[in-house]
Every structure is written in structure tokens, then in C-alpha cells.
Picture 1 (cartoon, rainbow, N blue to C red):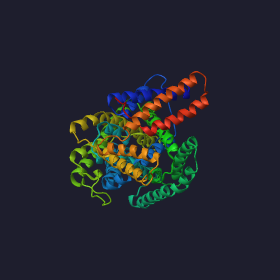
Picture 2 (tube, one colour; picture 1 turned 45 degrees about the horizontal axis):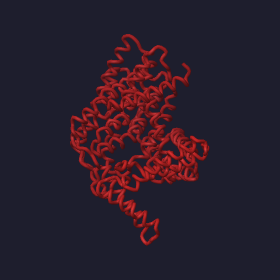
Picture 3 (cartoon, rainbow, N blue to C red; picture 1 turned 90 degrees about the horizontal axis):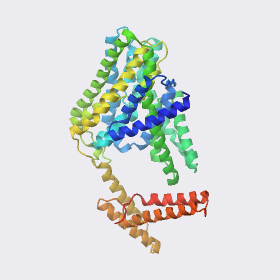
Picture 4 (cartoon, rainbow, N blue to C red; picture 1 turned 90 degrees about the vertical axis):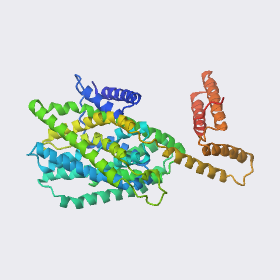
Length: 513
């Protein structure tokens, strides 16, 4: 089947599986990876041999930037201890535990190669875990810790992986000698990501056309990732720092921001469904190079390492929650919900949210030809990715429901606070203006403020209900004019866009009784 038709079929199938996953309340990455693995065994199954560095750039860079842009810097700062414990300690412990296990199973495996295996298996992919967490609305701090971890765990693991692969080529590995390089890469990546915001922000700020702005944003996202690679820095850290900074310096106008966010949502959805589908499809090529007794031995070893990967994270998360779960507030915010103490239940959920993903598989596929036990490492990467997606992915939601963690209303509470402050400021800006237009706006804003203070939605006011009804009638009249040929499509679409903005300004509202 030609490549184009294959990609279309995979995208359609993956999208259908995503819809099914939502209906069944299971994480879509799990179903997508399993679906890809099933397709890999079909006669004439497609084979994709994308360069691993291209996989990381295409699938990781936009998703990582989008996540960094949406991340709360306040919550990341308040939870830095818990996040750092997962990004550094949990990754380090997993790397060491896997390396020791691999050496026990394969005594001839060089230490550097064993460390490379541990490093590529260490970073969880938080997409699947967060997909489950959003279904059950767990405590705020738990979500924020996992979101923060998802931004940076790839960076620490990939740095260890790169040093270990280089050590295999050099024939030796020195932890002491690697530390200065590690520190230089981290600080250099932070500096470059922060500095790039100024020229990029100036360039995007001068663009007033939505399609051009979106294209430039995606091109620059890939450019930043590739630039960091060329400079020998961490593309993950550089991209995350850039995204965190850009979110606080964004100067996009509303008419550009609305379509831009819609495009980013669509693209990241497509990349996610294709990424996890490709994980399953890689099973075929991996199994082709192994067979017989060697395959059985490798599978048993891979399953043992899968158990080690799960157990190490679970034990560390539980021990941290029990011994050092209390995060000291920075004093900038009065005891925000992101500093609520961790409990054993939260540690259990964090420990069980360790599904691996595209980064693990891509780094395994990136191993150079002739790398010690390369086939076994790639098989193990696939077993760990698929095993965690299925085992933990399918049981995380039942676990959350079983633990009965308290429901969280932090976002709703803070949204009400923000709406009240914004509406109060809007009313204050009209003080001293006695015009008829100002009086009408004051009445509308006061009604919206009253709705907010009573715990309702400020968009669900009488004005907005009537506005929604008026927009609906206007659309029918506009459609009738086009149907009868009294106006052409150019005029139709111009007025349709104006009605769209009017409807968006009103927001969702219930139909009046």
C-alpha cells in the first residue's frame, strides 16, 4: 500500500480508537499501542523506518512545548522538591537498578551499555497517566507533580543515555568525568532557552496573519529543538525553558490566539495518536531479528526488567510521600493547594503512573549498529513500553477510584477569583462615564459579577442568553440570503465570521425558559 494511503488509514484508525478509549474510560495511548501491535502482525503490515532523531523532533518537540506553555510556573516552583525527586532521584535509581539487573542477566554486557539501557527505560511518558487523571479529578498537587515531572524527566534520562552511548564508543565510563559535562549541558540549555524568547517573541509579535503566525511558530519549535542538538545541549530542557518563558511574554492578539490554540490542539492530538500507534507497529521489525531460544531468553529477561522498572518507581514514590511529602510554601502565595501534604495514597498513584512512551522506544532505535546487545535492548524497550501502558494504563483509573482520593475544586475556585477580579476592574474602568453605552455595560458587568459571587457562570446572564438567541436568528437570516442567491459566499463568510466572534463573546448560555 502506498505510504500516503497507509498514513491516512493509520490516522483514521487511531482517531477511532481514541474515541473508543474515551467511551470506555481507558487511556487512549494504551489502546493505540495495542492496536498498533495488532496491525504489526497482519499480512502486509506497514513498516516505517523513521530516523530516531526525527521521531524525537517531530513527536516530542511540539507536544513538549505545548505542555510547557500550559504549565503553571507557580505550581512548578511550589513543588520543585517532589518534581526534582522524580526527575533526578527516581530516574537515577531506575537507571542503576536496570543496569544491575541487565548485568546479572547478561554478564558480558558492558557497564556503559547497561547504563544506556537503564537510562532509556527510566523516563515515564506522562500523557497516558494525565489522560486517566483528568477523568477522575484527583487532588490538585498530585496532578501538578506529574505534569512537572513530564516536562523534565526526559532531559535527565537522555543526558545519561547520551553519555553512556558515548562511553561505549570510547570504551570507558567515568561518572566523575561526566558530571562537569552534565552541569554544562543543563545550564547551557536553560540559558539558550531563556535567551531565544526575545528574538522569537519580536518576530512573532510582528506577524498579524493567523496562518502565517501558526506556521512560523511550528517552524521555530523544530528549529529550537534542532539548534539545541547542534550545540550539544539538551533539546528537552531548552524547549521547556523556552515554553515556560514564552507563556509569560506572549503578545498574541485575541484574533490570533483563538485560531492558534485551535491549530495547536489539533496538531498535538494527531502527533499523540500517531506516536503511540507507531510504538505498536515497531513490534514487527524488532521480532524479525530475534527467534527461537534467543527470543524466549530475551523475552524473559525483558519481563524481569519490566518488573524492576515498575517496582523501583513505586517504592521511591511511596517512600518520598511518607517521609518528605510536605512541601514548604515559598511565601509568595498563602498556602496554595499545590502545597497540600502528600499522603501514602498519593504516593501510590504517582508510583503507579509510570507508563513509558515514544521517548523510550525512539532512543532504543537510535542505538548505533554494533552496539552491545542492541537487539535485546530494543526488544526490552518495546516490552517495557507496551507492558506499562497495558498493565498500569488499564489499572490506574480503577486504582484511583478504589483509593477514593478527595475531589478537587482548585481550578474552579481560582477561576471564580479571576473572573471576579477581571469584572471588578472592568466596572472600575467605566467610573465617571455617564453615557448610555457605559450604563448598559455597567448593568451587564454587574449581573455577571453577581453570578460569579453566587458561584455561577458569569456568561450565563440574561444578556448573553438573549445574545445567543439573537445570533441564532441572525445565522438563519444569513443562510436564507445565500440560499436565495441575494448574497454570494464572500459576503456570507465575512458576516459569518462577525457572528462567530459575537457568539464567542457571549460564551455558552442556557436557553431561557
